[in-house]
Image 1 (tube, rainbow, N blue to C red):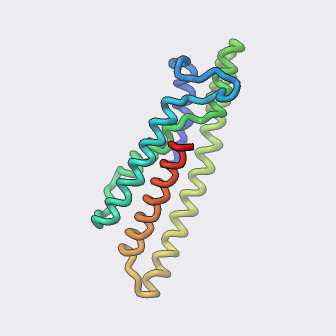
Image 2: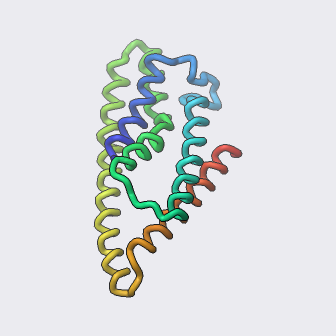
Image 3: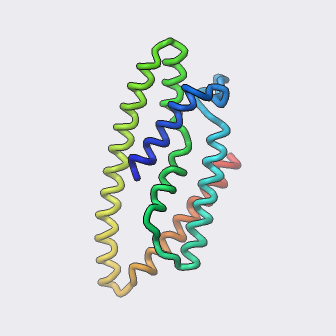
Length: 163
């Protein structure tokens, strides 16, 4: 999922720079931004938060493959630095430099996200063992965490949309 999120995050910036330059704001105060995609991703973030809250309330179990959908949605905000470098490289007539930078960003961000995901996975296993020792079911704890995560995403989505 880390690779999917990173590929969408960096890849969307590359695609915007290469094929949809009209989406990119060219003013000094918002250089390297794609307002339309950023707004869409904020709305999707709000939607994912609502979905998590409702799923936690209903007690639905985890379905295989839904993590990739969340990774795609989370990665929809184009990487501002990659977008800036790609636009700059294209304006200077060296798109290869922008693409090399994008590959480096993909490798770096993807590696960091993969390490964080691995640490979270190992931590979750230790957390589950601790819950069992204290008499709390893993399912109850997972639903509670999912509910809280949903509320956090809803809050972030609202703040991003208003701010």
